[in-house]
Length: 457
Picture (cartoon, one colour):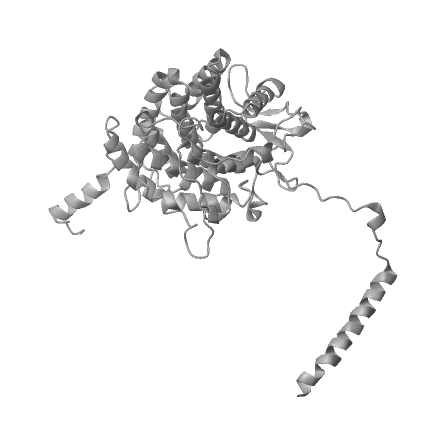
């Protein structure tokens, strides 16, 4: 026979099990309160502030790029809530990982870093500039936030590959990494968005030209963005980028959505307005349930195949949809009901773990699924804080309060060393090497002879 629980204890247990995130989407203070435990739970995964680890790192199984994405989310968290709890930690990570050139090319990431990975760190730096965060201190010897974003842009523009597929970025930076023979949409979409945001911030026409160039290549040359604004994943260079991988991920649509909206904001062009609206319409049809407007990752959630990276994707779509409402205000009435419905559903999954704030992958299920994952937690954070977009100022530019110091020429490869003039070149032969060896031996005997008395004494 099982012992009976005393009623007060039983009631307490049931009450604890029923605790969930209290979220009133019409009350900004309620949203900010709900975000605190969700953000704290996300940071329980972070190890870059532990002794012996490097600032900016997440542990296995998370790749380096997702850490950059997480710090972008934390910069937005600070902007939306005015809570600076994680600001120093975030800025430390960015300055550590940027390197002296600001290009976000750390040597210990060579085996995993692709163009898309580099871009997610550049987005964090760009957001820091757009939210007017103070630049790193001079004694850190790194560029300002704007300079970092420009450095990444310059390194990627230099990698634009006309030798295959008529242009475009390859997925990988280094030929020895798997994926070198693939041109993926997110790498090119990220370059497009970064160029658009730099164009708006600096009013430099070069960035405008590059944004247009990347869009035209993606849509017209290779067709990764279709005429009805579906966005494929990419294609291999062996087939001239015409044998598309037609899988559709939410962040591919999102990265082009915000880039197009920024270009509309900058140019007020009907063309960019139509592109923004077209991407938004298709994105709404593909990544939101018809009956309740809740976002989901259609390629993997229904069949339970979402891998580590993919669990975070819809968080970036939420981030970029929210930002789109500020760049293209005509989208507000279409976007905000979807973000609000998704935020409410996401919050209902955040009932897990010891803190009762660990979130689930499937917002459509409206309950915690037992997962405790960086991407899952970050996506919930992103969509919930996106509902605060109407309470904050839009991103600044150099003319509207931007403080960050830029460097339009930053991050470019060092020039090749000057060749040695023909007359000064000396070919080293085997006789030269033998002579050098004999000379080394004689010098050694001389040193021993001249210092041996020290040992004797």
